[in-house]
Length: 131
Image (tube, rainbow, N blue to C red; front, side, top):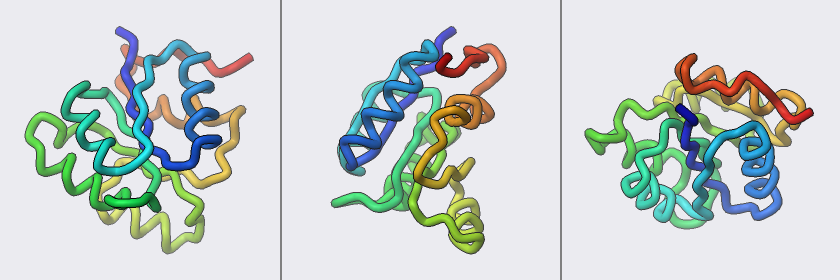
């Protein structure tokens, strides 16, 4: 079964790159450009994984996580924070808040899909990257 991945990112270039990498590896992506829309799309599409920026207009990534965890149908969905905050303390703060994972920006295109796949069940992993 191919995983559906929700990408919540307000920067158009970052969103396009993440979607391109995931789509090229066989994943289905849905996107939102702000936190409130991301929560709505998550409720509508029930993604297998959420990749979420932390700094966005409206709801921050932390607020998105809070909304998703409060929804019984989404509470167990893995959520990965992708952020330009890349200090050791930032990673600890992100993981302590309840995110399942943390990736720093700029992402490394060669490694990104493999890093994301670590948060998917084995039967949903495509096992590849962009060649």
